[in-house]
Image (cartoon, rainbow, N blue to C red; front, side, top):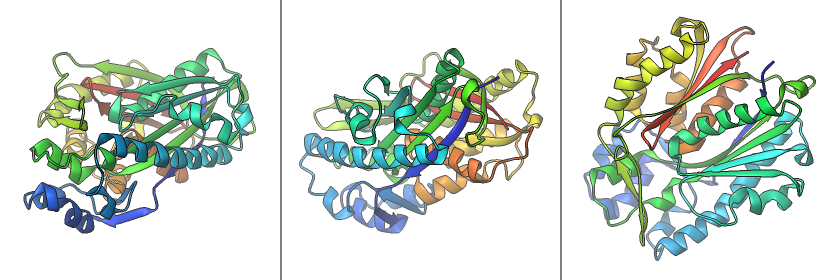
Length: 347
């Protein structure tokens, strides 16, 4: 028996803008060349932590991070309570909570600050994750799987909060910053999962069958942050799609093969909405049918790349319209390191 996902929720800030509105606000410092990147991003709308009019008045990293803490706590609380309600699990029944972010800093971390607010037990185990970036949604689910394999009578929660807009560098006109500013959006997500001994009677989500992690050599400079006095400065190489094409497809095939499966056995692809080039690279390298990654492209179009929240948004959409019983799926995300995470799902 395997752990199962019992509930998923995604929440967004109240401020939502079309891509054109966002371009209009950001080109005041990014220059007219920004429009070229924004129009090819696959994004039509995004949520932002603050009204667009406020970003030009942020005094620096300290003020931006203070705003991050305030908004992240509110969004995280909403997401966690909604996921618990979706799973029909009480906050006091949660035994362990993982949290992840890569767009702000808080010590105590978000899940610690939220514990009393949402009603978690005083003996809840806390496992904050930082630095995994976009891969963290799948990595968090994988670590939930690992934990619940060892504690099959417990309940685990994962909280992901990313406010990417608060990392935008106003004076950075590099291609990396222009691409990132055209892609990333803000949001939060939570997942509640139960060990195999508790699955009966709760909402039937996908079973977490297996997981695998990969880190690729000599790729540390492909994706990440440079963190300094002005906050988070994006590191984003044009090699991302190339690395995906070179390594990820074979790793997925090998992972499936170790469980007696091929890509033809997978009906549901829960892929992180990294951007058009990466989505196309995965689709082409795995020779997937044209509709296989529709939910990923929908998430990118409607919300932008939500970093660690992105793949959980695709999972939420999948659970709202699940495949038939007996189907297999795979969750895939990539992030700094350069690294990838895979989770085998079963319905």
